[in-house]
Length: 294
Ligand code: PAF
Image: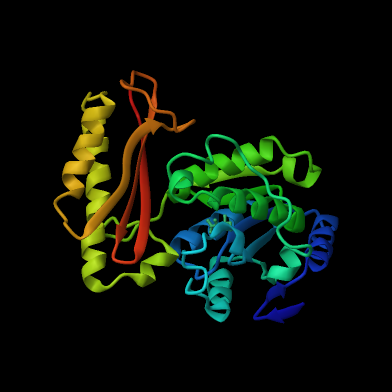
């Protein structure tokens, strides 16, 4: 364990248990923000929200190998622990948990958590083992950090639903008791959702990527003005995305926000989630918006 500019940096589960036990002895509750590092303003806003509610705020920084497919960007995923420690400090976090792969998977990744159906659609259809890796590592991170509340961004909407299912079905007491809080996606002033992977984008890619926000905004506006047909809403996203030839669309869907199930026509009282995944050069980008229809 080391102490850097008032931030405690721990690398082992045993250290986390000690830190959390000491904080609880002093009456603190514990908030956590699981991350893969290369923190941006989106993460900082989660840390600030956690710091406003909890005496101890633990930010985990772990690029989790089990959620990357063999052809994906695990090796080149951006990493910079020193910079991340600054972000955590400035946002009011108290502890960084930066374990090694061996610490998180002492016997290898032998047992995994699979949440049926919702893990297999959309992102799960394109990245078949991704959500098993996410559910497994988040359960292990919760066991290590033992939080009362964990904070995630809405940008990874499907991930947040899977984590909620994982918590609800967990038989591990430290995991089953965690409250999962989802906060709105943080965007750049031009609308691009903040993501650690934005660092891969060239200036042109960055401009091209703005079409994702435009497509989501047009569909949300249409739904708010009374268009409830899934086909019409999806077509409007596809038409907007088609205005930028550099963008290859993987999916652009309108589904029920709670379940991600499809429905031909939405109705009053529904929450519609618009979800988009595209590739731009070698970079995959995802984003979403949720609209309540009245
Ligand atoms: O959203 C992320 O950064 C990761 O998927 C998470 C939740 C930290 C699990 O590795």
